[in-house]
Length: 189
Ligand code: IMP
Ligand code: MG
Image (tube, rainbow, N blue to C red; front, side):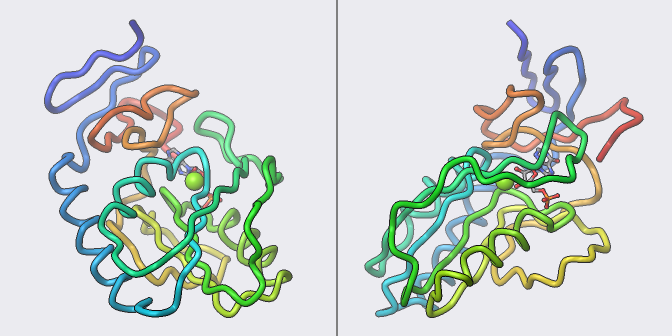
C-alpha cells in the first residue's frame, strides 16, 4: 500500500504530507460557498463546469448544497506533471453542453500560477456565454501574472504543494478526506 494515514500526516509514495485542512472544515466551508453561490444565481440557471480531475470531490460536495436550477458539465485540462509546472496547457476532453447565453461557473480545486484558469476563461469567452466566473476551493497566496478574478474562494493557502480531497501527488492521494501539504521537500511548488 502506498498511502499510510494517521490523523495529522500521510505518507504518499515515500513522501510525508501533514494535515493542512481537516475534513470538517472543508465541508462547512463548501456549504457556505454553496449558499453564497445559490443566492447569487437565483433564477440564472447557471452551468457549472468541473475542471477534472482535481475538482471532482469539490464539485460533488458543492452541488449537493446548490438549490437553484442548474446544469453540470466537465472539462479536463492538464498543466502539471507531479509537482512540476508544465508550460503548455492542453485541453484533453471538451465540453458537451452549449455555453452560448449561459451563466458559467468554473469549479477548480486549486489556483496556483493561474495559467489554467486564464486559459479556460479565454476559451469559454469565445463561445459567447452570458457570464463566466470562477469558484476555487483553494487559492495559493502568491503573486501571479494572471488577472482572472476568483469570485468564490474556499481557503487561501501558502505556496506549498498539497494533496488530498481530489488533488493528487503523482496520481495518488485524491481519495483522502482532508487536504495535506508536502513537507521535507526541496520542491514545494
Ligand atoms: P495553475 O495553472 O498553476 O493555476 O494550476 C492549476 C492546476 O494545477 C490546478 O487546477 C491543480 O489541478 C494543479 N495544481 C496546482 N497546485 C497543485 C498542488 O499543490 N497540488 C496538486 N495539484 C495542484
Ligand atoms: Mg485543477
